[in-house]
Image 1: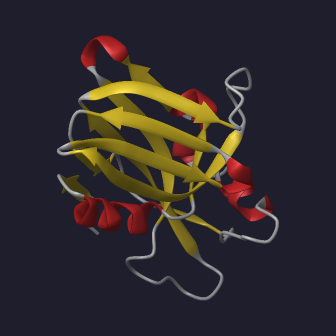
Image 2: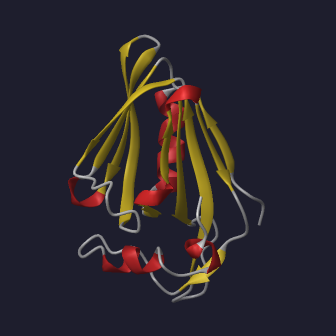
Length: 160
């Protein structure tokens, strides 16, 4: 399987990236805003739906997503003091406010949201390595399976 690489310049492009990132898990420590570079980076364990595995076998891939031209970052219901806490990414959205500027929202389970004020939408998604098998599948009822998936696999223990 080849590594996934996507680029988004508008809301429609970002919907495609969002679909690939649904149910990705991320440690708080793997969220970075680089204000001097006007860049926001998030490294996740993406739930791979591209090729269905055998029954009971699922896959994840270590994936980076970064946004350019980021003016500010706001967080809601995300504790930055717990670097190893795991978040479940549900969706990524863009709303244009003053063309081409707008707000990117990274929406997590349990009400967590990160808002990026951007000059314009410029996002890039790239898989960082091969996929690995996991027996866990995202569970929207409890979130327990997603949290467990974030702690399995060799890439899950690597820092960003």
